[in-house]
Figure 1 (cartoon, rainbow, N blue to C red):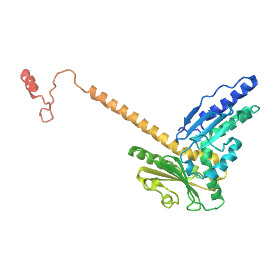
Figure 2 (spheres, rainbow, N blue to C red):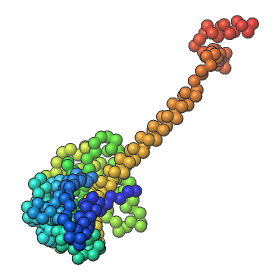
Figure 3 (tube, rainbow, N blue to C red):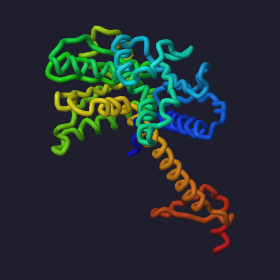
Figure 4 (cartoon, rainbow, N blue to C red):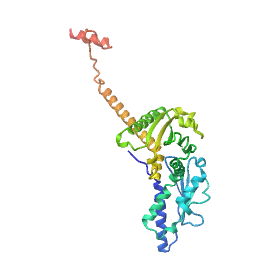
Length: 329
């Protein structure tokens, strides 16, 4: 199975290369080369842009535009980003983007390779940090036994992640997954139900509990205090419910959220692979059947006389049969 990276490889490589280039230019006393803007996107439709700073060309501006940013809690998101990126977070993002970071390459002239890679990795995980703020806030409220309204993270068009604490004894994360056609829905149902059944194994006893609802919105969403358009269009959706307990939230929160965020893309990617694999197998099977039919064709041009056990002729060419019978006698 293929796991999706927990960062954007393009951003990671670009930031590291730019910092190393500035270091080399500084040592040689040369002028920094111009940087050509780079745009990229990922599985969830997040758009990235990397351009040089207008005032300081050696610095790099990394911007991101994520789905549903305006629906997130602005104060919670900004507080977390300031905590992680500090002065690198710009107050005013670039036009058309939600968040912009300024990578001050001159700040890393004396830094080690490990420190540069650590910072570049953090920048390449910008999308996850934007969404993690809401998760982290909900985790804290749950562990502190505080009641809260359902949080909605619209991380894709027409799809969202919902965080609720309806039952009180566990934190529930609900994915809504939209299927484009009946074939995808059938494959999705098999795949998600298989994952849910694996949870019953003894070796996975500490894993989060998982259930799947096919074309039926869970009760937690029908009673949610946020807008849930998927409820009215439940026939086009599948809903995966994941129950998290205290033991799942106390350590390695950020890594856990990355796995949660990548879960949808991970499942849909392998569903598409399974669909393509089945199409390949179908085509091979049809090709074999066509070859067998071709091999069964009689290319001699001689009409063969066939009779049943009763002596009745089976061939449709009766004239040929009579002619051959008269020649025998």
